[in-house]
Amino acid sequence: MTDTTTNISSDKESPPWLIQFKEVYENLTKHNLESLGLIYDDNICFEDPIHKVVGYADVIAYFDDVYSNVASCKFEIYHFIGTPTEAAVYWNMHFQHPKLKSGEKISIMGHSHLKATDNKIIYHRDYYDLGEMLYENIAVLGNLIKFLKKRTHQ
Image 1: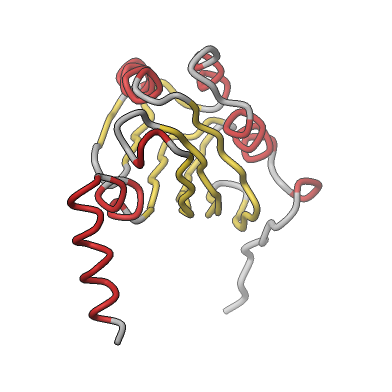
Image 2: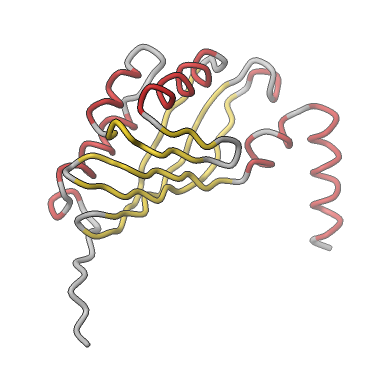
């Protein structure tokens, strides 16, 4: 059996929807959430470790809520692989939340699984360490988690 999958690993080989995804997310702010309409299908299914949201209007409402609670949020996409209709995207997210880590910048690594049809993303699932993002950055709980991690790595 012959494998007909084409692996994509650079901008010049990528389908338009993947290039546009990278551009939208690297420039996304609370002031331009409507740019998500350039990449998402009306029936988008978006999942992350906390939520599952279906439908473009609900995804926008979710992002609006998330972005209203952070002082800043910036994505840095550093690698992606895929086919013309599916991709894995690897990124760093740098954000500041007034109630986490005394408002200091927090950086986490993650990746997204994307599926597209007709140059629009129909499925987007984010994978990241929720503990690293949230729990480790809450004063008392964070210290306990760091202590436990240190103990398990001895």
